[in-house]
Image (tube, rainbow, N blue to C red):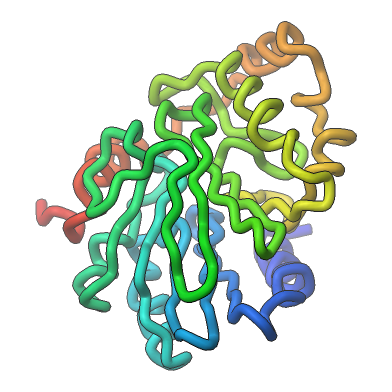
Length: 257
């Protein structure tokens, strides 16, 4: 399958799995083709309050336009971690949609309006989203949990049949293994999991699926560490630009060069 066909196929997948809960919650999934990043829009259709998870800088105008068209108020723009593959859109969204509060983990080292501690909650309408500290890919990774919907947003900590790399940004394989097994795999088996990326056209998994089929995280910790040490992945193309920018862009638009 060509890259174009894969992108088209991934869009068809998105409109199947994610949209099952849209009638009651106004959930939408948005996609950045360059970084293969999923951005998640969740809304309470009664209060019209909404949140975005992992917005991308270049897509901020698109996201803001959709939010305005839907008659929503963006209350929070959250990042699961300080990204290395794209620049966050939270600072730009604060300009486009005044009143938006940027959110990231206290351990991330990035600027934001609000820094979450482990198990801390923010609210949008009648819903709560809770930040679970799940370090390992980076020190500041958080998984965002909406218990009322039975869903979790795992960022780069847990991917579909994989996980985030641990060879930069203070990553640590043993820490990641512990985070997944103690914080995510202990959720109910039927909880739906939504990652920040997928490169094979998938969009959704579950706790039960990953506990059974994840080829890395079904191994014991020593085997997992060995796998992660031998991935031999290329250096992320955007890291030298994205990480410095993302330290600031929770509050501000990208600095002018």
